Image (tube, rainbow, N blue to C red; front, top):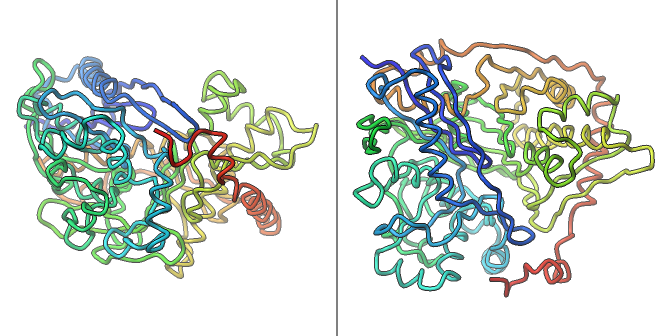
Length: 514
């Protein structure tokens, strides 16, 4: 029996493929970045064709590097940046517009209109989500309203919508020659179009956004065979057997299967998920209610989530926009060259602030500057902002649950930064635990696929593979911890109320922008 599983991780900045063996160990890795497209302030796009081309490349490369053949693969799991919206023509397989990325804020005026007549949480009972440009629905509606001929084509049944998982799976399974048009419950729960209780698309919400139901993929579980790869020469015939949004996949990879278990992922943004079991828990403190996973015909498991827009992408911004570093890996060394932030605090509200604030009017702010501050202090302030934002969402978790976690499991690329992990423990006041495999997003997708194809027998089997690597214990005194956090909250207050009519006009992002 084949005992390897391939995970495709289609992320915000790159696409990776990782082959895992039956112990959950990494056999081989391939990765390729894609272009970040910024047509205007607040607009963020990706080229779906580039994403698919990169997917083909990393799949081929990872099998070659690991000397793994298609016959060695029991299944393929797919995980992805979640809310990003892609619309394409089912006849040609060509996108009608660039993907509109989850960070994009061009639809804020539409969001404001809907919120004005029913409040920010008017759809939260159905969807678990606040009204925000973050989610997919407004992005799809924008494409239909602004791309010439798109609405007519959609109503004629020619256009398909999907988050990146849907796009990848459709192409893997044949594309315009019979590709399978599906998503899973976790990704569907991030669209503002799915009812959390029925796990089906809501006709009411489709009508609100003016999206034809025929555009939408079939909603499947997170762990089941949905189709087979049809690519000639590359993994042909291998079952696609797992689909999870990236943060749910990371939680799955951390073996957080039961109510109360949690994880925090450090990637382009940061995402803290707390499993709530089969109960749909409504947050009163700015967290999102979402689907954690569903395996086969079992009941869905739910979670509350604290979503932070900008963490790892701030390091990328320091590299690409300011040139403070030449490689992302340099930020820890630069930040470690100073003892503290020099009084500087960096609020990276490039797309507004997500959880727990949900303030689209906020914009990035670097405050507390003096001539003493150097690029090293700015690098340190950038890293510290990740820890402070995590404290913000942890405070919301504590307020919602009434319980302070005894530790937090972490994963994602930024967790390799020991300086950041130690500061995170210091600012939270609880241990931060890094596992041996920090690529838990890809691992979670592999687990989902492997469960569906018999590589692993169940959750208990998967739990045996989790291994602790490093435990960072808090070392900062409580007075110092709280003083720094108060300064952070003061810095956040300076970022608010920035976007108004004047700002929109000057940035070319007013309601008439096309």
